[in-house]
Length: 170
Image 1 (spheres, rainbow, N blue to C red):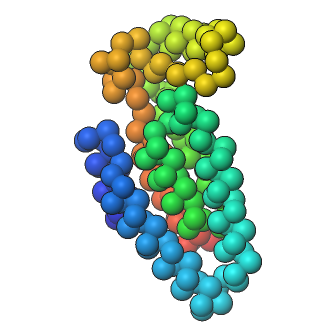
Image 2 (cartoon, rainbow, N blue to C red):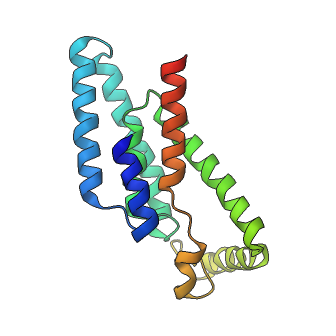
């Protein structure tokens, strides 16, 4: 959780998730999976099923990366944190529910609902006329992209905190 916290802080400050954080999270989760399998808390088949689910999550999220709706670091962070969960699909679902709530709050607070609707409308219309993986514009101007972005590392941290709280309390 400390490393995920550092990742969130770094993402907020620099708007990027460094690969070194992802590598450390992979090493930590690999060690935990190995330890759980070795001690008998988890069997090998359950570990393989979790890894297959994480690969499926990548395949589901990759098209969103290709259109620019998600960053590569966000997808890697979701994948590497989902490995540590018993149900990666539920965890990913919770991450995106939290992100959706954050997005709705941001739209309401910044009062840019008309702008967001206009960008979505343009994307839908252009994707039918141009090509299947048309780049999704998240802001009216490229310079405003950071202003309108949501740091997906925050919902990842919240979802992971909820998961561990539930896991250790119940």
